[in-house]
Image (cartoon, rainbow, N blue to C red):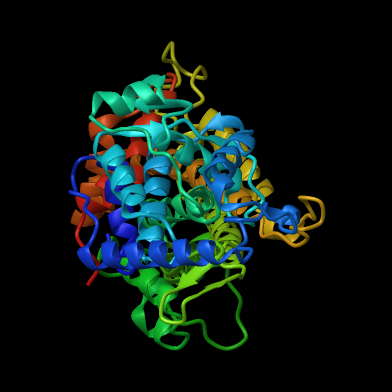
Amino acid sequence: MDGHHLTLADIVTVARQPGTLSLTLDDEARRRMTLSTELKTKLIETGIPIYGVTSGFGDSNTRQIGAGKVEALQRNLIRFLGCGVGTPAAPDVVRATMLVRANCLARGHSGVRPEIVTNLLTCLEEDILPVIPEQGSVGASGDLVPLSYIAALLVGEGTVSHRGVERPAAEALAAVGLEPLVLEAKEGLGLVNGTSFMSGFAALAVHDATELAYAADLCTALASSVLRGNPTHFTAFLFEQKPHDGVVDSARTIRQFLAEGDRRGAVPGILAGAGFRELEEPIQDRYSIRCAPHVTGVLRDTVEWARRWVTVEVNSSNDNPLFDVAESVAHNGGNFYGGHVGQAMDALKTAVASVADLLDRQLELVVDEKFNNGLPPNLIPPVSPDSDAAGLHHGFKGMQIAASSLVAEALKNTMPATSFSRSTEAHNQDKVSMGTIAARDARTVIALAQQVTAIHLLALAQAADLRGADCLNPAARTAHDLVREVSPYVDGDRPLQGDIREVTGLVASGALRAALPEPV
């Protein structure tokens, strides 16, 4: 950990595969942290007012205190901020937040001791996680309320989860040989005055959206196949003429799962003169199939710039004030502002919801006998008209209803959180980012879209079985078989919530993409 080279892939690994990576503080980062701490001490000794060090916080910055009160000031800071509400953040979000905060402080400009970072990293390795309520941050001055629970952990206060078991923080620290820290001047502020909670959500959202884009392209290819669509809609020539990177990548992925050649019947003969005829098959498929790369491609491109922005954020000094060792001065600014994270997450959730809507429209084509080119209505297994089961089964009717509901909820959550800046904290924080709400929304929308994708994949597997194995190319057949490993063919009405959960896991974990060939 050096404050400069943390990747989003690193964050995802630490968050979701705890214990996989060894976490240590870089020696040069340790040196920088020590130098900024020494500068802080010298500035305190001069008696000049330093924001959040020898002054109060926010609009209380006109109240200067003596050097003898600096530790008590930091203690009170993390206590009065302990007012979060709502559902506790998931363990992967908390791990991501702790790692990001450690890395930001490791840049060495925050005036905090190396012990702050090393203790954070030890807690991560021992899976000691503060219980952080999700709600209560406006995203500037950073994530004050949520991050106060990380600071409380380090001083041995509050409740934590230690390897999945809740216990008092002091007990958990003692169990792994850590002494509670007494926060020195600026250290409480350095821990809470940053964007790490929203960045934890954002890093995981960017990763999950990447997996979702791949799964959506797979769904489009499968939908085209089972509907006997026109594969030439995805020919490379078209996308060379409008070469948005994400759209090109999306079309390439779709082609990987399409069989060679045109699945349609024989090309009709030439119509001469002023004649007229009705074609047996349409020349073009509906937009949700034909235009799919132009929808999912937007998500792919949004992911790429969101990844760049979030990567900068997690490798930044985003608290206040910052200590400039070269100039021997403390600078006051607004690096805690979460504008880039908020804007990235508002855009990401909108692109994700649009893809979920696309898949829902494809699902309608697959289950509706008016549009599915000969598949049974609602993908009901065929039965003899004189069978006792005739007329009793409804197949994927309920699944389409559920998908429609999930998509509506995802679309509802695309309202841009960053548009709702508030004036707060006695009109000191008079323009705030709402980046944390945007990032939480992105997490929620992605989870909904993953479930929609799972429902669609289940329907597509059912349609492929009804259509016959020869409708899928080998790569697409592999995807079908992966779904079938966790969800058997629906030969009659049965509850499918467990199937949705299992296939959602394939999408969310990346197992689906890992088992399939890379596009060429």
